[in-house]
Amino acid sequence: MDLGTANTLAYITEKGIVLNEPSVVAINIDDNAVEAVGSEAKRMFGRTHARVDTVRPMKDGVIADFDMTNKMIQYFIKKILHKYRFFKPRMVVGVPTCITQVEKKAVIDASIMAGIREVYLIEEPMAAAIGVGIPVHRPEGNMVIDIGGGTTDVAVISLSGIAYGESVRVAGDEIDESIVRYMRLQHHLNIGVFEGERVKMEIGSAFPQPGNLTTEVKGINIKTGMPASITISDDEIREALKEPLTVILTSIMRALEKIPPELSADIHSNGIYLTGGGAFIRGLDQMIEERTTLKVFIPEDPHLSIVKGVGAVLDDFKNMKKVCIN
Image 1 (cartoon, rainbow, N blue to C red):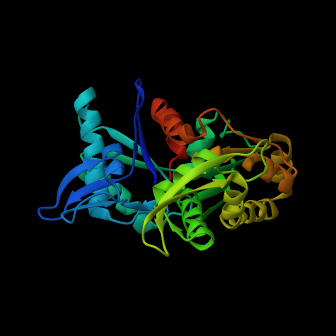
Image 2 (tube, one colour; image 1 turned 135 degrees about the horizontal axis):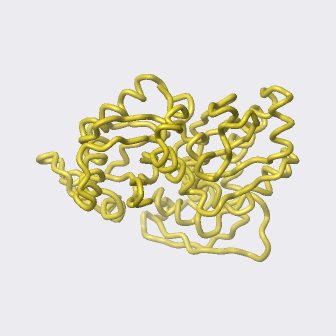
C-alpha cells in the first residue's frame, strides 16, 4: 500500500493495482460513523452540512489523525478483502524518508487494527526506484526524487539501501496552497485547495511552455463576498509555484553536494529519476536539468511508481525483504 497524503493506492500479488482513491474521509459527527471514503468523500469536501465533516487524515506524508486514518485503512482493506477473499494478509507500506519512530508505530498500529497479519515499511524513494526498474541491489548510485502530496523525498540509492536521504514537507499540497494564496493576494479571489489542485493540473508549469495555456478559476470575491470567476494564464501560475519549487530544487542541490564523489559520478552517468504526482508539472524536468546539468527521466505513470515498487517487493518478498526498514 502507498499510504499517501493525497491518494492511497494498493497492490495485490498476482492481481496488480486494485485501489487508487483520494485519502479523504467523510464522518458523521453525531455518531462518529463513516459516511464516505475516497473519491465519494472527496466530492463531498467543502459541500457538507453541519453534521458531516470531511477530513484528510494524512498530512505531510504521515498520520495526522490516527482515528480517521484507521477508519480509512479499514475501509480500503475491507473493500479489497471482500473482492479477493484474502484473510489477514501481509502488507508492505510506503513511508517517507526520515519518518520518526512514533510515526512508524502509528502506521503499523493502524494497519494491524485494520486486520493485517504482518506489516513491513519501505521508504518511498526506495519503492519508487524499484517501481521504475532501477537495479537497487547494485553497488551503483541512483538518484530518485519523489514528489508526492505531502512530502518530497530526495534519495541516492545503492546496495539495496539509501546512501543519502532527505524528506522536505513541501510537495503537491503546498503547491496547491501556493496557488490558493496567489489567487487571494493578486486577484482577491478565495478558492478551495481542490480548485487549486485542478488549476495546477490543467495549466501548472515550472518552465515556460509553448503556446498560452489558460483556465477559468471559480471562487468567492473577497471584497464583495459574492461568487466570481476569472481567467488566468500559465504565466501567473508559474509565478505562484516559484516558491515551493525553489525549496524542492534546493533540497536536490543539497543532496548532490553532500554525497561522495563516487556516487556523484554514478549519478552523472545515470541521471535523475523524477516520480510521484509532482512529476506531472510541466517543465519541472527541464527546470531540474537546467539547474543541475544532469539528465532527468520521468517514467511512464510516475504517480504509480511507489505502489509498483511495493508490489514488486511483495512478489519476491523472500529476496526483496532486505529493502524494508525496521
